[in-house]
Image (cartoon, rainbow, N blue to C red; front, side, top):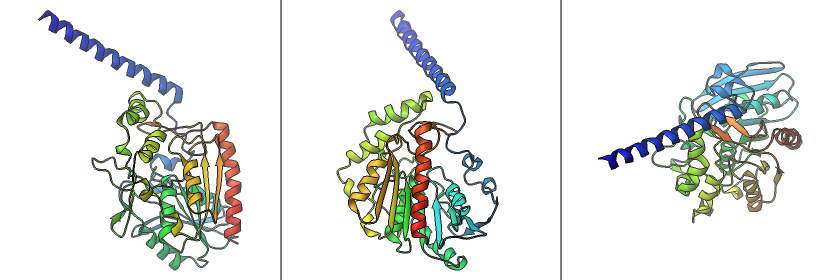
Length: 346
């Protein structure tokens, strides 16, 4: 009996010690990183599908809310349109429309659309099995409401870049692409269900995908599980990297970039802690060198904003890069984007 009591006491002491360590670490990381999101200075990132949070009173730009079947977002028309065609902008896994790019470009005289990929009516509610055919409704809207229909550029960031590149392999109407923090592969959706599924579908079939759940469990726990428990920034880089390396059929999960003739501008940071976007950009260019331009920034992260940590409501994500490196990369990449668009929307 005494041995049992001592054993139980030892176990309880160990559990209490571990709980205290976790609490102490959470206090430390909360103090170190605070609670303010570094993803953007705009309020709509706090509730991405709340349309009322998006600014519609923009000087020199007429903003219309769009709601047509699977198409949801905003149409931004500059009162003084200076460039031909239209630009369609997608956000990333945060669930927002690509409004920031759409707004900035509209203020420079481009007609733009900021479009949701998921989370709205008639769309998947999570980033999983999102049909590429949603772009049919985008094209229908452009044909019905845009006088100057071409050329057409699509901009995407992170998962939005993965989506946009897939779109270009299916839709010849897309003339050019700007992809920030791109992916060369199709990855699993982000629904975190028991059974993994692709992020995207085409004609009712899931696109072949890299399954992050099949990565080494020790790697997942060290890079994601433990940091999430103690409130430290979660690093997904090695989770994605190992999932690719461990997949013997990874080549079949590559996005078939040779199926598009669109000109592509790829922008990536060398300190990206979400996934290896620099390697992805180089891989895309290797597959289709002609018409593909790569701009990399060795010290910048996944998003060219903030100090490399993105505080979400329920976790912290390491995005990489320093404040100075991200700001410099943002400024320089904006010039590259402007030059690319000037060339393609004359």
